Length: 93
Image 1 (cartoon, rainbow, N blue to C red):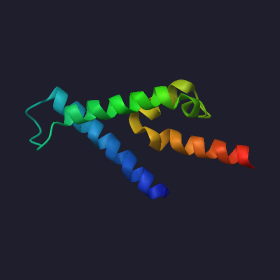
Image 2: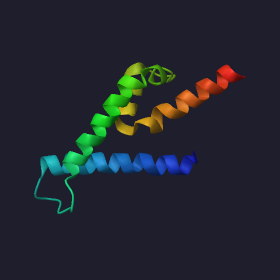
Image 3: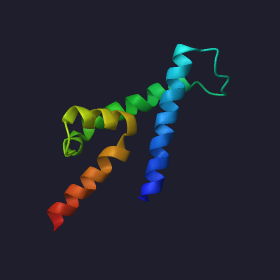
Image 4: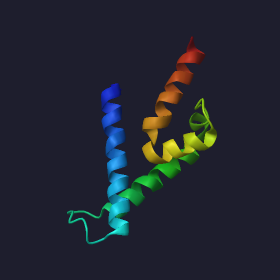
């Protein structure tokens, strides 16, 4: 996937999570046509499931495991999929 597109999707994840947090702390501040807190919690729930089901790929991160888990909670497959692809490429070569 194009690196620019990945960064755009990562920014979208952060934006949604930020909107959810803002709406949770100050419910009357935002007048959005959707519930950002519910959307953010849904995104975090899906990413939490990804941590469980893609843990073998999450472990491939070169830094601390806790950082990799946090990055997966924030970005989901945008974090662990490149790790899995790099590992598969290494094993194939």
